[in-house]
Structures are given as structure tokens and as C-alpha cells.
Amino acid sequence: GTIQIKTERSSYPVILEEGAIKKLPARIRELQPEVTSILYIIDKTVHTLHHDYIKEFYPEHKNIHVYIIPSGESAKSFKVYEDVLGFALKAGLDRHSLIVACGGGATGDLAGFVAASYMRGIRFIQVPTTILAHDSAVGGKVAINHSLGKNMVGSFHQPSAVIYDIHFLTSLPDEEIKSGFAEVIKHAIIADHDWLQELMETMPSFTSLTSQKLEIFLKKGIEVKAGIVEQDEKELGIRAFLNFGHTYGHAIEAWAGYSKWSHGASVMVGMIYALLLSSRLKNLSFETTSFINWIKELGYEIVPPEDAAFEDLLTLMRKDKKTIANEIRFVLLEEIGQPVVEKVSINDLVLTDKQIRRLKG
Ligand code: NAD
Ligand code: ZN
Figure (cartoon, helix red, strand yellow):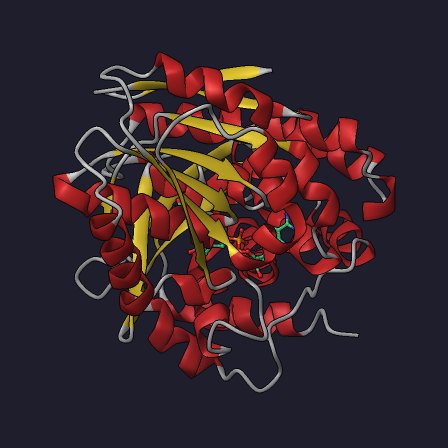
């Protein structure tokens, strides 16, 4: 199916289905002004696994270029950014050229930032290949990493379309499914109590997740994200709700050096932390215990790494974008589906940190 995303200055479709990539040539033909040349930027692993499939649906077009980038996060570097720009310049891409990003969130972020900055901005289409990318491909945030911080150099640049072909997801390793699905669960928690209940009741494990169900859940997740982004494209207000679980979660991810703990695994612990904090501060009536048991059943970690001291996590949390005047802010829940952003005292943070660590065993 198609979800139409409307932002202040643009409107674009997210085409989500098995075989969606078949619709890429038609979408490119529709673009005005006409596309002069196309640069496919493809994640190395995705290229190895799926290039035969991708190239079946190259538009009939004279100027198609392909650039393969390193797999995953390592693509979001100044080096790769410069290499891709060099390739684009040599290939003669002009202002009417198009970039097609084919890979996970890392590919989308890098390719999107290339598109945002090449000749002050050219169009791009996202072809996401991970579950997590249901989140990252929608919303127009693009960025690369600086050695001093993740996503520190970037822009807002909306794609001309998101072509989300479920076919790619069949080759995803279990760890990537788990990581990406954490954001699906996040979308349910911040927006839809009934959907969260449905997830908890009908999905005791990832083996029970059929591709039909996954497609429905991804669609719901995209609708939640789109609904929020449409109201707050530049993250001045409610877009912060999407940050649920990310304050404590990012701290874990950064503490682990963005390697051993995946984004989703870190955010999942961050969400449990934020739920406990919400029970403490907002009288959240939701049964966190059954949620935590379900999460455990799904195979997620539910506690932070033992040797990550609270003080270290606190230092990292202070760097959060929501921090204002040195006061740490959290996305909390009054109820499932009713997030608020609030300042939290260090004492409450300490107590909740102790509480989450007691869940171990
Ligand atoms: P990723 O792009 O690093 O991909 C994860 C791994 O899966 C990589 O090793 C990749 O090679 C592999 N892979 C990708 N597709 C595959 C497939 N179909 N089959 C097998 N392997 C495949 O990670 P991700 O989890 O998709 O995205 C994480 C990135 O997204 C981070 O850089 C994060 O900062 C970013 N992000 C951006 C936003 C945003 O709004 N822009 C939001 C959330 C996350
Ligand atoms: Zn996230």
C-alpha cells in the first residue's frame, strides 16, 4: 500500500509492499523536472545479496551509476561522504540528477546527506532494506558522524519517495530484526495503546512474526512517525516524542562505543527505563511487569550492561539534545499513547537506575 507523507514544502509517497521496487521506474519518470542521471548508493552487504534483484528494476535510462559503500555505520564517515561526492562529480551528476539510497538507516543517512549537499541539494529516493529503516527513511533527517559525536553533521532533506520493498527483509539477520523491531514497539507505545496490546498478545516470539503481520506493523509504525513529523518537521516540539527510550538508550549505545549494543537493543532498555520512570513520576497505570516479561521472551536485554556505571551513563545523558540549561529531560508517559517531555531530577534518575538493575536474573 501507499502512505502519503505531507510536509510544509513537499509531499511524497511511501510505497510499502512485497515487490515495491517494481514501482521505482514509474516514480522516477513522474519526477519534475525530468531526471537527467541516477546514482544508486548501495550498502555493500545489500549489493552482495540483492544486486541482481535491484538491477532488474533499473529504470530504462541512459545514465545510471552505481556506488557501493561500506556496510552499516562505517558508511557515515567524512571519508565515505567525500568519496561519494568525488564519484558523483566525476560521473557528471547535475542539479537534476537523482540519488537512490539502497540499504539500511546508515545508507539512507549518508546518501541523504550527499543529496542534501551536492550542488546545494538534489533529489533522492530511499529504498530501505532493514526494519529499522521504517523509522529512519521517513522524516527527512540525514546525517553523518563526526569523531566527536554521532549524527553531528547533517541536514533536513525530504526524499522524493520511499520505496519500501519487504522482499529485502527476508535476508535480515535475527539481530537486525530485533534491533529494528524495537522502534516498531516504540511507535506503538507513544501512540497506540490497543496496538501495543495486540503486539503483546499476538507476538510471543519473533518466529510468530509472519511477513504479512510485519507489513501491517511497519505500516502502522510509519503512520505514527509520519503523523508526528508532519506536525513538527524540524523537531521544535512534539517530534521529541519519537525520542522515547532514547535518552537512557543512547547513553548505553554510546557507552558501548556503538558496537556491542545495537541501537534497538539499547533503546529497548531505554524504553524500560522510561516506563519505570513514568510509573514513578506520572502514575502510569500500564502494567510494566508484563511488558518487561514479554520483551524478555522476545530475546531482548532488559537491563543495562553491568559495568556501565550510572555516573558514566549520566554524563552521556547530559549530552542529549533535549537537555536545556544542564537539566535532563525525558519523554515520559501519562498513559500509553500519551507522551510528555519533562525535566527529571538526578535523584529520580538514580533511583530508577537502581530499579532497572534489580530486574536482572
Ligand atoms: P544499518 O544501515 O547499519 O544496517 C545494519 C546492518 O544490516 C548492516 O550491516 C547492513 O549491511 C545490513 N543490512 C542492511 N539491509 C540488509 C538486508 N536486507 N539483508 C541483510 N543485511 C542487511 O542499520 P539500521 O539499523 O538500518 O539503521 C541504523 C542507522 O540509522 C544509524 O546510523 C542511525 O543513526 C540511523 N537512524 C536515522 C534516523 C533518521 O531519522 N534519519 C532514525 C533512526 C536511526
Ligand atoms: Zn531510534
